[in-house]
Amino acid sequence: MKPASFEYVIAESWDAAAALLAEHGDDAVVLAGGQSLVPVMNFRLAQPAVLVDLNHIPDSAYLRIEGDCLRIGALTRHARFEAPGIDGPLGRLLPRIARNIAHLPIRMRGTFGGSLAHADPASEWCNLARAFDAVMIAQSASGERRIPAADYFQSALTTDLADGEVLHEIKIPTLGPDWRCGFVEFNRRAGDFAIVQSVAAIELREGQITAARIGIGGATEIPQRSDAAEAVLVGGPPTPERFAEAAAAAAGSVEDLLTDHQADADMRRDLVRVMVQRALEDAVASGEGQA
Amino acid sequence: MATTRIQLNVNGTEHAVEVEPRHSLVDTLREACGLTGSHIGCEHGVCGACTILVDDEPVRGCLMFSVQADGKQIRTVEGLANNGAFNALQQAFHEQHALQCGFCTPGMLMLATWIVERDTPVSDDQLRDLIASNLCRCTGYRNIIRAIRAVLDQSGNAEAGP
Image (tube, rainbow over all chains, first blue to last red; front, side):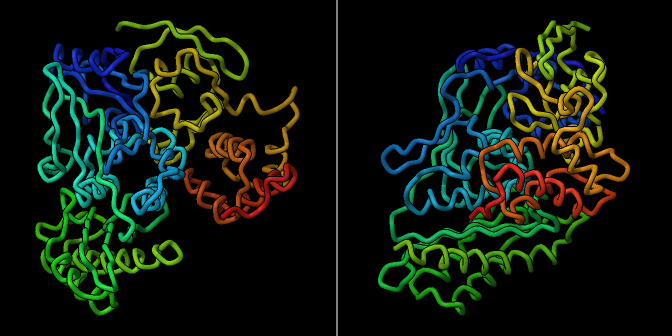
């Protein structure tokens, strides 16, 4: 289980990384935290001729609020999100999600941008990015391109990033004070990939749900935002009955569920129902004492 | 195949070694530096047997290429004992029977070194969660937890966290 030979190049800037990718095309792969890429290279499922190390690029790991957006530097390690120091519902949600990612030594190496670029179906950050309509900012030798989450995820491990492009920043819209957010995932052992996970955000005004975002990860090749569940939620009070109806709508409408050694499609569909319901309950619970 | 010369400081000793970019850090420690204490288990980041400290942070030695560690401070299990005498953590593993076959022990000890050295109180739940990072197939973890807890209690980092 040793990787194939490659040439190792350190990129000192995003421009340099983009230039290297322009020069080497699909022979080159970028290295961030390496916690997903290096296993894939060790299995020789990836055999890049050139490995472009991004870890020396200055000012590439940051969390910054700018207007109504959270800007995340691609090299920001997962562990950084465990105490983000960001106010508001999104800031409070991030550590709750981060703690579900693998184990702490992995979280200290793995990066937010790497997770988005790798696009594992079970990625917590990909689920968040899709549900909250993040924008991925890719850099290439010809400039920057902004990719909305709805267009970004193509299939398992495949994104809209083109040869020559490197993901260098992710923007997530922040949420106003009336939002409540929850996150849950199901796996068999702590630290494992989620079999199914859900992120739920609801906006509560005068006891009524006025807006909702329901994200489902792990169930399908790419993360899903459940229009069906959101339609059930909006316009009524946050009751257990409404949550159950929304969860059933989410489970009933999700298509092309994955089947693997851990869970078949039927089990995943039922897990979607249970995870969405629990994420909604978690969202309400998270708001207690905050408002 | 083209090689690069890198400089590693391992347990306080400088090692200038020739490596291929594809060589993992744990392979380089074992093959080029002659330090075979760090074990190689799964080679894809799951088992934690190769856990070492790079600039005092726990790292899967199989998921970092040695060229990435050029100029860095590495700590391995060989650096724990003082002149052949167990340090507190090794002594606690010995007394609490925190190993049987011993394959996971070098990684467990280095992860535990980081846990006891960081200035953060650790509850029993947090300790279990942290140690879940590394696989042990013999002990059922109870004695490993007990050994680390004993050292944490000595060093005053025993208070329950949030």
